[in-house]
Length: 408
Image (tube, rainbow, N blue to C red; front, side, top):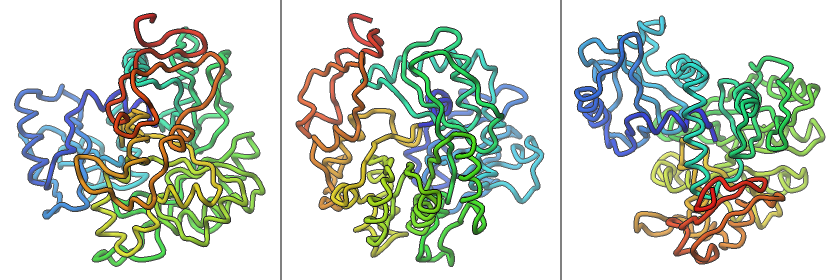
């Protein structure tokens, strides 16, 4: 997950229900009428999914009396700006719709807040996480997750186990933290973008786009970045969504001669399954993304969706699965995650590729990590699929201390 962005997302207008660019703009207009942005800031809303919209975004749609406005996509890989926001950020006039690294960089600037404010929000967010039985997170926050958590643990935080992930732009050396709840041994690297933004790197073109996605690195550069991370004592954790990106990530681990983790693995070739297993690579997957993206996948990965979000195929190949949310992309709720993996449906729709479903026990094993002193008490059977999406969590304990429930 991206903890800082998740903590902030609850304070923004959610555009997840927008059915068109014009609809998204109308939702923003109505919200701005009641919540005008503070002077010297960019108004930010998030959660739009434009992959199936009948119309296209434009900066003019977001002109609201000169206020700088930016809309962040649900997958956080694209940022739609109006002219005032472009000027505020000092960008070229043509850069009103940003993708990938330029979008990441702009979002970090827009969302920068004082550390004490962000830490207060983090404490609130940790309590929300505990209420859903979350005892630990892997934090991929781009704006210095190791430094942020070093500060919080230094101030006495004990509400979650945190694996804080570094990025190539991270300041070195990483801070030392004297807490058994903290770890920082991973390096996040990207091979590609995302499905909804049509930047996930595939072997086949996206229909109607003339392209197959965007590789993040030139040939050889990803391996060089991974080697540098290994030299610093970090294990690569490689983002790969398209099938071409997954192949490249596997190639990197094979060249390094070490196992590691691939994030997402949303589209995978059959030939790459035994390679993943042989190399001992962990597939860190987010089953709820399949529910969010099923219609987009049917359009842009037509004819290939039998190997999209292929949890059963991964499990049957002997690949270790580790579930997550990528919050705020999907809810930070392990029970929703498990429900998606087991039922392959939500909102009363027919299951999507039910042949790729897991059993409840398999889903639980991919979600729960056994740690001494951690405990989650629930009020319904976690192996009954009908209970999962609305699982009542009675109490949560981390390292012997209650973080949620009547004893906390």
